[in-house]
Amino acid sequence: MVFSSLTFLFCILPLFLVANFVAHRLTTAAWRNVVLLSVSLIFYTWGEARNVLLLLALGFFNYGGGLLLSKTSWPRLTVSLLVACNLAVLAWFKYVVWVLSFFVPPGWHSSILP
Image 1 (cartoon, rainbow, N blue to C red):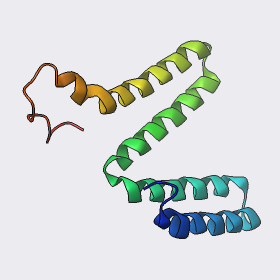
Image 2: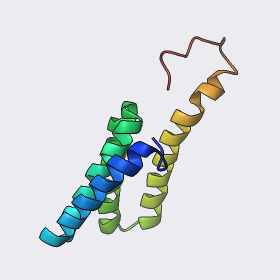
Image 3: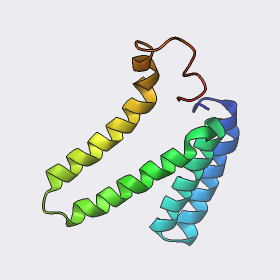
Image 4: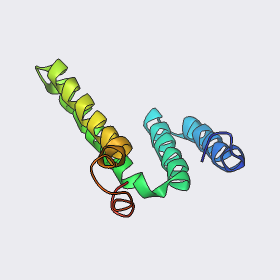
């Protein structure tokens, strides 16, 4: 799903605006973050439900990395490792099929790789 689709404009966006307004009026700022996360997951699941668990895992990984970053004495190393891990996941899902296409016959990876 893209931001200019009719489903987003008439379903997801109004849902978010109403939920955010209610959360802003009735609760604390932490609940606004919960609303934003929930609507974002709905939006992503509607468009590409296949990788929602990966998205959640990366979110928890980066949240834990942020907590670790606030307590570590080596912040540059911590940030470097977090960025490297995120780039490794990106490279795997974006380029693994392209790289393997140089070494294996076409068609064998269509059902087992992203």
